[in-house]
Length: 376
Image (cartoon, rainbow, N blue to C red):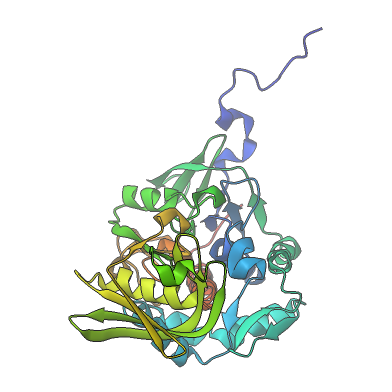
């Protein structure tokens, strides 16, 4: 006998009885920023729902720090902002001053994640296992009754005045109303993790522009005998310089990885971020190892899909830095790499994700307390 499917032929909005429910907050994106925003909402007693397009959350977080997850760096917020440079420093000043690296560490310790500090002050879970960081976040969501909906791609966001002033969020199978939306879908690198630029496209439909994408924190493609003779080796304490018009425009130190295709590692990555930000017309790349200088002219980089961070995205001029709220669309907020913010490798970008997520949720919570009442 053919089994009767009671849902057959009915539109999704008739199947899901919560179609006319509405929440104070919908978070789009279940990565580091989105999950942390959910934790902040839960601890603020702010009902929220996280929508994640992939079947597992935080897949890029699990790759962070070669699978060890460098969550922050044990330095003052002022030093972190100085290291990040402009325009990120000015934009993140309020968020990182309010929720500095010390507060990030304290939050994770309070949630029973043991931490360890490396000699360069990078902070990792003591186990050096990224899944432990993810479990801390998802356990907090569970304990504070914040729902995480996986395999859920948001197809559209529409402004609405019914049943409340806010937004209607439509997915493949249901729609839900909300007064506030926080988009935390990340950049466009490592698309297999779910970072495919859908959040930026949704923001564009609500009035935002987009800055062009460029690979940040990426390796350089260089065919050079010096690299080939050291293929597979990692060198520590390498000085890397970007030289423009015979002047040193950038200098930094870190490890250098010699690969089949060229060079990677922190020394190369941080130099590539400077280049992506400043976009010099011509430049030379020079590195010094034990007094030996190697110099190449305008090398290429690996593709954008392999970048640790994406430069570009939602322009910072279209976001209020004290609340992370859109200046184009009230009630729309952002956190993390979807914005045109980035920093060096070594815990800076996760710190920015956590701090911007907290900043946004704090602002939404204050709005709810002041009278933006919500009904479930």
